[in-house]
Image 1 (tube, helix red, strand yellow):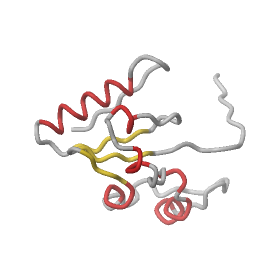
Image 2 (tube, helix red, strand yellow):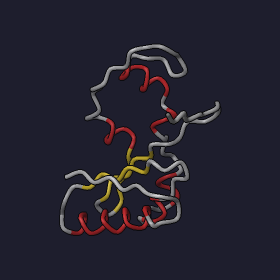
Image 3 (cartoon, helix red, strand yellow):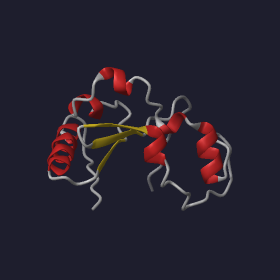
Image 4 (cartoon, rainbow, N blue to C red):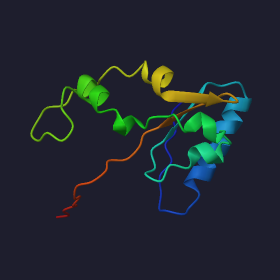
Length: 119
């Protein structure tokens, strides 16, 4: 089962994700919680000790891994991406686990200008 929670800011997405992660972990299910919010707070909502998460590298900051898996150097333009890269080893290398919940922080892209065009 895979769940994704989205919505406007301040609507309780992090709280809901944390509650669901704990419920499923307490039922004995394998849980991988991915914090994809630029203002990553899921670790705190899940009660992860700060010393566990301080050493976590957000996935967006692993430029060498991104290039290796997607076939494209970060920042390049006009390249073709591998759409189904190998990811089965990511949780073991980039997650921490606490009370049955593995946590992965996706991170955010820093710098640059972002524009959206609607037609």
